Image (cartoon, rainbow, N blue to C red):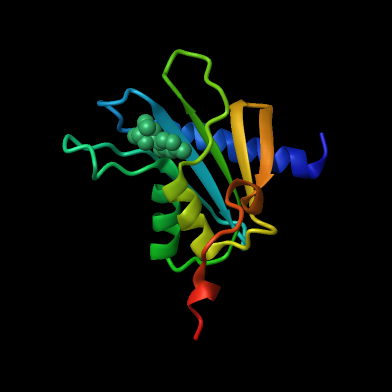
Length: 142
Ligand code: THU
């Protein structure tokens, strides 16, 4: 196992660990994310649902908002997992809102999104691939 692979595997493990804390009584669908900052710090997130439904937050945004609120703004990659507990899930792609939140803080050409459906079963995408022709902070520069 090369070094990069080992690191990805560790990120996936941390995403599953975060998933174990999912609060998802309404959908029953549990998600987890592990967001790696450029300095190597990892921020975990899970989905947090709400009886009023719309205040629900995805695992990815939980991780980003935790990180940004702690002063981090530069990120390398994120591992994401999602499935109904007890069922073999598929790769869980981030929703459009989460992709846009990633776009605010990440370079679409380099930020990696790792979708895992098992400890060692994953696919990696660039943000550019999942959010092409995007609108970002640079578009609001005067
Ligand atoms: N969810 C995430 O946390 N991340 C995704 O990428 C897709 C969806 C959550 C939102 C909601 O709590 C549940 O999964 C079902 O949509």
